[in-house]
Length: 94
Length: 432
Image 1 (cartoon, rainbow over the protein chains, first blue to last red):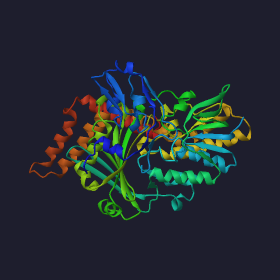
Image 2 (tube, helix red, strand yellow; image 1 turned 90 degrees about the horizontal axis):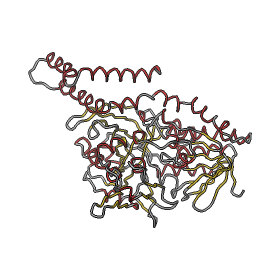
Image 3 (spheres, chains in turn yellow, red; image 1 turned 60 degrees about the vertical axis):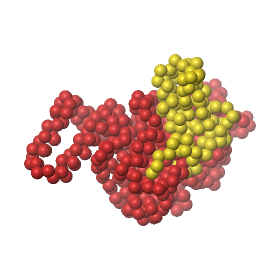
Image 4 (cartoon, helix red, strand yellow; image 1 turned 120 degrees about the vertical axis):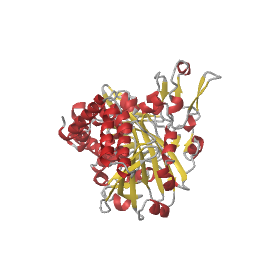
């Protein structure tokens, strides 16, 4: 079976994104993080380090709400909450 | 106080629903609060529920619930890049487990709870616990506060509330496995044909080795009615250390030559991810405090060796609810009274089993590079020698194979690992 790109995988999930992010890293503290573990451990590729801007971009609307980033965050500077009650991902077929 | 009920249960997974339904059946008022649109909307697992514990809560589920297939074959595979060894256990009169889709099955559990009198509140996130002195007396949601005599936390592996309540410390990377899964539609007839099944019968696969060689992790595959659930779970610590993207591992598993034909022309219908608490016995949190108890994944009740989780969730929910009933009857919600829940868990298979296996996961994690890569390849090598016909004398080949255990690496490593293995097995069998 052909491998779909992560964006295509996420396309199969029903998302109802909130206006504001439920994932709030301390972006200044992110600058001193050496591993940037969130940028590869996230199963939805939510986090991207944009070197030109020296900034962590958070595509929270793709979050699958697993919590991996919260536990893996080296600097413990991620304010992680669940999305509000009617927001976020809905799994119908899992 | 307004809105006061006997018990508030946070989270409509198997643990929460089981607790709520047990309380309602005992005549207690209970509110079940779920952040998703329906029970199951946020719930993810590998693929199978177990008949006996499910029947304890839902006696008629085999006739009523939306089930996918009854598992009649379990297959275990050891793999490297070019070889595979498989062991199959088949038993078609065994009705031990069924594959289910949680988006459907959990809604059945929700319906049964509502029929029993549980008030189900959906699309509501519990943000905080409400305290009166040292006692938890309710929960704060985005819109309103709810009050109760007891709060049961069934809010899953991340349980931010358990942490707030001081019941649980922060989870460590080595205590959780990150699992990613795809549900791939193939069609009922094709599944029957490719997996050698008839309709209603299913398979469960567990895969060790490629593409997770040397990591603490495994692949899995379950057949549903017209789709398969396929995924990999790997320790968060290994993923972080080895800098691997979890979905790339899953893609490798799917594209292993032994799987390609099984999944051919399949259509991806859903992708999901979830953490599995695998810290075991030593990481079980404090289970009760004044006015609050913690159940299921939130209490880290998972036996990873046997892929057990939903069963422990269902039974822990029931035991917490039974404790709540006793506490309500004597109007005593103190930690001392609610600690009866801990005693009930200790007397059940849940803590007994987690205690039995307490040395297993740490031993495997410690020696994962050896057990899940080196020795795994040595097993495959044996079968290669056993099946290869090359005009060389057999005894010579066997002797060389045995010798290789001592010459591949420092012989002391072999003895050390065998000692760990024996100690681990004795730990399970004798508790030493």
